[in-house]
Length: 392
Image 1 (cartoon, rainbow, N blue to C red):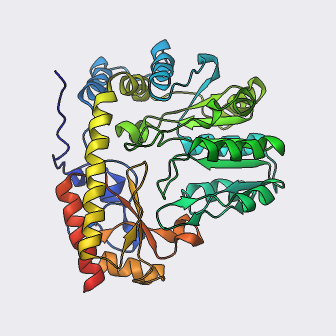
Image 2: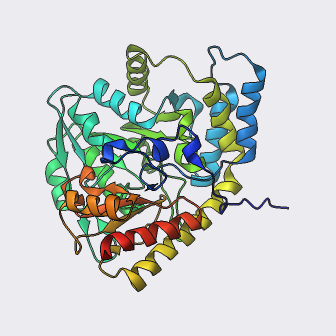
């Protein structure tokens, strides 16, 4: 009999060291029970009980020394990719790394030189900007085009700009706009990168968070040639709400690139695995499937609630239906295109924190990213607060 998980349960995360709930002073407001923070991308749901049991077993063991990944660390991930994405991955291709962003930064350092041009598709996950610029590389933007019902790729612009780039960082599914890229879109981008000798770093951290009617395709699964030119980064962090484990994996088929990637990690001091990550990573992939499926159904119902609320009570705020992730990209441009004015109204009048879209690129001015992976009662309160902010 299938276990039914309770996603309506409200957990008081203000009592934890939650960054989302207790560390938002940079928004210009002190931490307070009056503020409802739905900004950083983790869930407000307790994770699957067997994952918690695996972590508790580490606590009970009582020794927290230098751990190494066991065989199940790799086989659990390989089995998951075969079952979910029909992607056959060799264990030889897998490189553990303590986070997707550290993996991106490592790829930039070892595969490009200072001054090299790196392409991203804006608006996009804001650490991409810092990863490129703090490593003294040149940021190149291929802005997505906003259509009536979704964002699309400007392929004419992509083709022109990719000619001069050394690397392309793909966000798939896309954060924050929620696109799940189709095979033809992925194929066209990859073929242009192959044509011009551009290394692809594919951030696929949200790849398990796909809504009904859509399918994630790992970019590297499209062909052996694409596989040889791609570093794919995945993690259980978003899928199973275990971001605190700080554990991801790089999938690198090309042996030369893989060796350089591993050497880069060592040169940066990434040589050990967290004891809890060594246990939690395989437990998530072994036992988290049913929990994830139910969570996705619940989150998609939250999407419906938000879209209905906007239609009925806040028609001046627009949003596309996301195809994946647990993030919604709200368009407040009819309210204000000034990020400071918009955020002041939301925070000081609505007492709600959602993320200013301008940090995702200039195309995000007047938008906000809204994390909807919370119990429905919290989402209902959030929408009421957004309405207060807009209509007061």
